[in-house]
Length: 183
Image (cartoon, rainbow, N blue to C red; front, top):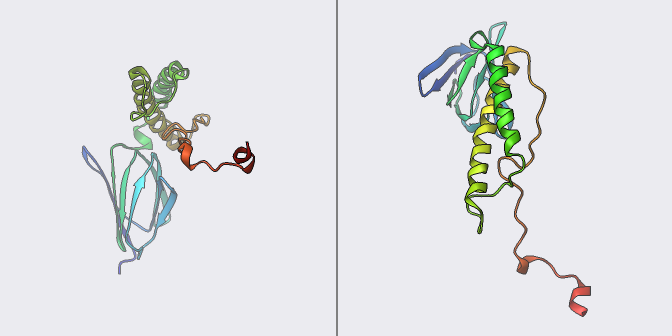
């Protein structure tokens, strides 16, 4: 067993990073996870965020988009659509893009969130949901870049944005109270 981890980050444009590291922390959809040499096999879905890795006494950070990670005893491979390091970030351009995305999201605030499979949903509402999902993903990527740069934007809360509220149970599954049965 090696005392190092072969870290590889791959995007559709090719290998973005290859390094021999001592430890890695990455953002999964369930929260952050860490990988040390000798790690048990793991497959994780990633969310947009910061990957931190240590080479000796030096800690480095990069931003990644959503994707997947596969870990083993001496290797971690991250497959993602987006990747950047701090040196490639122009905070002025990123802040301008973020303001444009947030303005577009503001325009969609009044449109109800409707699942594509909802009965009776208007096409405009379903399209608005799809647009909103794309814009939120873009907003998250821009925010991750600013966080990596050291100037994160203010936190934004969008509850139920990704999945929407859970639907109510079918009428036949709702327990009836004893007072309903007596009347």
